[in-house]
Amino acid sequence: MQPKKNNAALIVIILLLVIMMPLTFLSIYFKFINPIAKKSESNEKTPVEETEKNPENLKYLDGKLYFYSADKKLLGEYTCQKDPCSYANSEIDDKLYPIEYYRGNQEEINVILDRYAFIYDNENVLLYDITKKEVIETYKSVKNYHNMINPEIMIVKNNEDKWGIIKLGEQVETISEFTYDFIGLVDRLDENNLIQTSNFVVKVGNLWGIIDSEGDLISNYLAGEITNYNDILISLKNQDTYYLYDYNGKRVVDENGFNYTSFVDKYINIVDKNNNLYIYDYVNDKKISSNMNVEGPNYRDSFKSKFNAETNTIDVLIGDKTYNYNVG
Image (cartoon, rainbow, N blue to C red; front, top):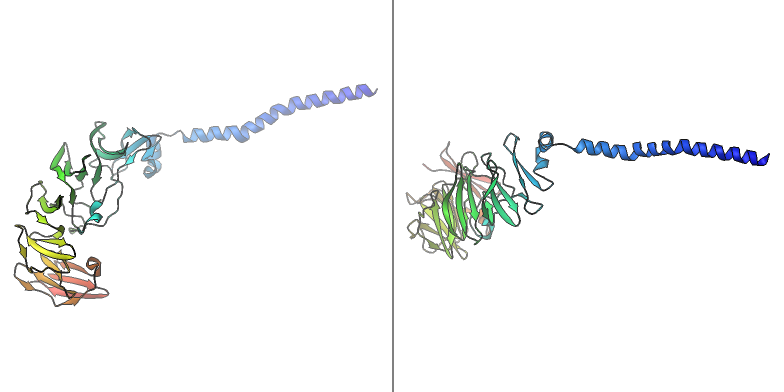
């Protein structure tokens, strides 16, 4: 009788295995495989669908760049030549010189006029026409300060390390040929806190000058480094001394120079050799403030002066003290 019992037990075991193996497989499938399939299914979204959820996270995906309008509509895409590629950053090389530039960040340059994009790809900066789906020009670098009155104006460097200026529109217009070792803008803001782009500081070799928005030289070239300017005078730094020149290249006000000079509207902030700050009216040849003591050597940050058109005054902030001077 013993063998019969063993056979019956074996049969029961085999039947249980036959029943349990499919159940075990199904359990594994639903626990591991099916969720992965569902997850993969849920991720199969188009760039437009993803953009509607969070457009900032989809400038780049799987070897492609995506471009958006100001109201976050997808305008087009670009396939990287060398993956990964990216939106180009604005280069601020002004910090290599004493020019008083707008202290922004080297941020990505967004789409311009819903048509153009600057792309960093394969170690170059490419100007890309989104509507035509083509690269128009190749550069080494680009800058726009992210805060300009005319955002379609771009300062670009070619592969020979020379800077020029272009304007984006129906066509790409060259405002200034690629002849300069440096082109920059000073920190002069309008009533909307945007950088004025009427004139540019330029450098050729060891000489500095001013060009206008048409690319024409409007000052004589000067030996030294231009730090700032207004419509009448140019502030030039030579070693540690600041000088004032007119646009014809003549040194004015004081031949011996100053510790620091800058401009507030049509007036001049002057720090003399004794660290006395005063406001000077060059047109009428007179001081319009008393002497105010400031500490160097970083004079730009040791005081702030601002012209107030409503009260016709210049307000000077030194530390926690404010001084007000009537200018007319």
